[in-house]
Image (tube, one colour):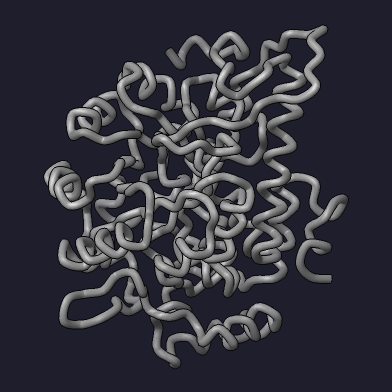
Length: 393
């Protein structure tokens, strides 16, 4: 069973149903890279659990034939209040990778954000989507490589730049160390040998991987005078590419379009980003993959929204698995949310068909939740529809 049939109902009813399918299809190293988090994975778990602390206050005896799910983000009209977040190494999860995810997002009328750590050329990703595509920037390879990527993104028609600021170094993702993720992407043949039996247990994935030519270098990180950055240890690459506020000022001079700062968890950083002239802020803890024991994104959202004072759009990512999660974030002041793992599980399970199905599930969840709340549109959601713990304020 392949493609859309493999992820149709009742086999896949909710986002969580993709996880066992993805786990079976891809090697443990790849699955745990997608599924895992930093250190004890406290924040990873809390990102999802914290949504339970917010409960709904519905308006009953309200009949709505349909509900409006569209919103406007950075000047773009989106059919849905969620964007597909940047997910590195998507091509390792499925050969279609970033191109497949962008195509599914565009077909659904929403935006896709391309990670710097992409296996497909940014031009091919943009060409694959009918919707807006944003470029998520790491300063890997230095300012020269970043400036070249920004110019390529401009020429290709990317709509916005998303600058991630929470990677001064890479968080220690213990599953990756145990499972050989580093050896898989950049190790020598000798270093890969202990992990070969696990690869052979996933012949479908392995055949696709080999047909795809293995994982290439990073085609969007072109180091001046050297060419594409090879798949070196990403921990070392990120440590040499930390973004500072001074870098953000330089980026704003190079890129004339809207800039989103991703990785804000405090009001202080929100105000600093606004002072630097950004168009939007994404409240994010990197999916629990960087500093463990920081607050869940939904928990940090009210502080950032208050600090933003309506001056910029506020987005949020982290822990989104259901339409109810999206609605709660919108009620707390997010303009839209970014979904990463929610679609990446689908990509790993069934390629583009899996991403399409994940979007469909979230869309259906959203409309059902709005109708049960008695709310006619996502743009009408506010705090009156939820109970929020007093401590959050």
